[in-house]
Amino acid sequence: MKRILLEVFLVAALIGASVFGFMNQKQATVSKAKITELTAAVEAAEKTVKEKEEGLKAAEEEMSALQGEITPLEEKTNQLEAVKAALASGSTLSDLENAYKKEKNLSAERQAGLGALRMLTKGAEDPGALEAFRKALQLSELGDRKNTICAAQLGLVAAGEKIKVMADCLPKSEKAGRGDKEDKDGHDKDDSHGKKEDGKGKAKDDGHGKKDDGHGAKKDEKHAAAHWDYEGEMGPEKWGKEFPTCAKGKSQSPLDIKGPFLKSRMVVSADYKEGALKMINNGHTIQVNIPPGSKLRVDGIAHELLQFHFHKPSEEKIDGKPMAMVVHFVHKNADGKLAVLGVLLKEGNENPGIKTLWANLPKEQNVEYAPEGVNFNPGNLLPREFDFYSYEGSLTTPPCTEGVRFFILKTTVNIAKEQVQAFPFKMNARPVQPLNGREILSN
Ligand SMILES: [Zn+2]
Image (cartoon, helix red, strand yellow):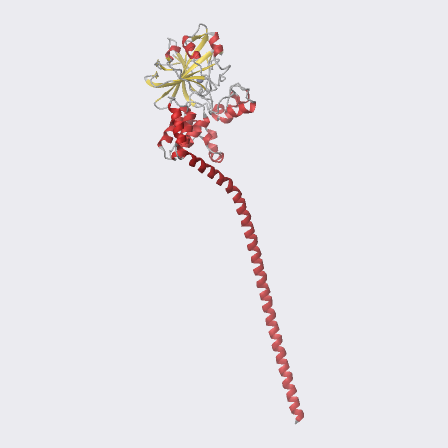
């Protein structure tokens, strides 16, 4: 009996041990699975944390790079704010306005500067700023002062005016976007330039100023100062780089005038009035600016005389021959169409009109000079006879805008050799351009 009991006990113990062992084993398996699971979870969590950290690091790097870009911008903004604050009282503006008040006619550059100062002082909506930029644009449209035109156009845009800004004035990236079109037809761009007239010139260009005012400016400085010239690295062969129409245009001026001619029935007459003399040396020529009231009539249509200026030798040739000089009288009609009347000056007797002009040559470049009490009648430079050659051409200076009607008088006017020599430019004539099938009329 005892033995049976013992065996039962042993069996029970064995079973218990087995069960216990089984249980433990099961428990261990479960735990192991759990540990594996937990390990995986920890690993995943670590991975996530690592990834997040990397992301964070990249974001931090990006932020610090942006900060590098933002800081200079902030500085600029701060500087602009400082400038605005300094101008806020308006005393700088009123000082400048007072200084300018004495001058009857401000140059385009000064008008643009005044507009910019008004805008900084009084804000973009200031009507005075708008007016100043408009005047600057009007004045510079007749010249080749690209930077001033840009300043005035961009100023007007900043003031909320909806005007077309010349492509050359746009920042590079924007320009690239429109590139194609503009390359194809320079007109697009030129039109917005406003026709400068034949520009002749006006002001040196962008009013950068003095080309080399005799200081012996170094080549580099000169380069920076003028975008174009009559010889050298910025001579007529290179104008097309910056002013595409100069190279690609098909009706460019000047021309070598020779037959066969078509008969012209146009009736042309000049009605020029005496007015206060106003002259400017724009670095490319001597130009006389004309107050309103002098007109050229073409078939009864009035073209207002804006300015006249000189080229030496004459840009136009007659049968291959240039004259000593030429005067270009530049007119604009109500539709904006330009007409240039050319009077060839031939070496001979002294010219009294030119004597008056040369006696009053501006001493400084790019500043309009109005000698006290001196009047001038542009008609003094015209011959009596008005027979002419006529053709469609262009400004003979950059941007070489086309759509300009030329009338070159057949009768020349005298100028003394000494007067030719006294003209302050050695040579300021663009070479003659291809006719490209254009007809030259003769009356
Ligand atoms: Zn000219």
